[in-house]
Length: 150
Image (cartoon, rainbow, N blue to C red; front, side, top):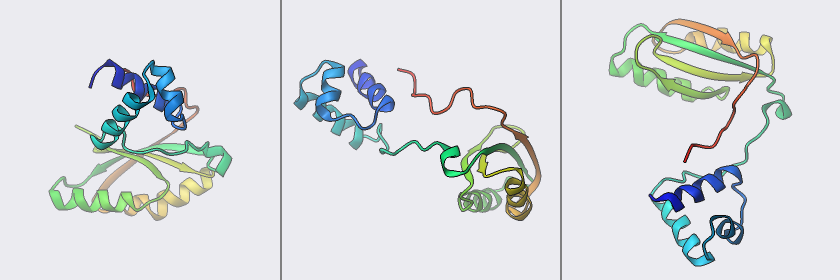
């Protein structure tokens, strides 16, 4: 991957709806080489897909929390069961396995505190292998959905 590929990626992260002609102009290439590079980036997996970035508040998800999960055991079966169960909870926007304590960081979006408490009590606290959950509430997103650096 060279500097031109990185420039293509940066432009697409800023506006994924660019036409190939617009993209080529922004990166100072003719259309054919730009299109070839774009196809290569898609085929190689550097571009995993295209999607709309939706404002959570616009769809009634005005409350965000970060939940730290510590597992009782970290054997392969427990980890697999936890990760499969967490993947099935639609309000979990991101789940990251961490080194050290806690074991996982979950980013949760719900309508409000009452909805979060219900999700916490009925689903999160019942996830397989959970020993402890600790939550913190997001006051404000300072940086959200930033493009990757070049």
